[in-house]
Length: 206
Image: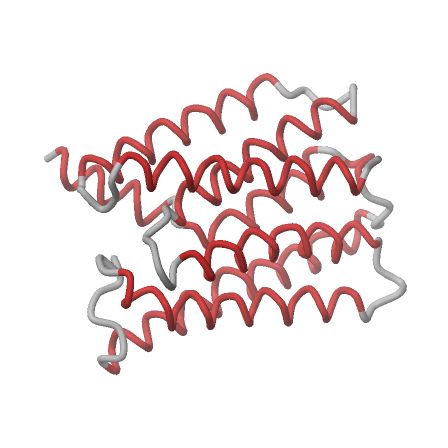
């Protein structure tokens, strides 16, 4: 029973979900963080969900069905290289697209650029070592919540912060319970994601 719960947690809170959660916070939870008119936020959010969650996820499932990837859980370092590389390309293309739209708030492409730094770092490390992608994403999410709480006093940070902390604990425990990672791989992934997003998002609003 615990194994099934751990699997569900790992699938639901997969790394590809993190940009969706980050931009959900930026666009809807902290309206003063961006100058984007309310009537455009849903469309921009859908674009980000499409390009950073749905399309990469469909691509990875396609790789699994074609036999290019042995398992969606990617238990070996070599299983991660192609999916992570393709995901990196999707994220970079999304960042470039947002950068090419001068009418959009620069926060969009700058935020994606920070996330891209984390994803590129994860991908490069994954060529030689199995750093936790789940915890890299969650470390980044937690740091964004903290930065928003620090930069925008009107943001009610308590519940998002508690939610992010609980997610970090549950997902880390699930990955360790499934023996998908060693403890060091979980801790290093979390620290890398946290530091990159902490530095990057503080720089955006410096």
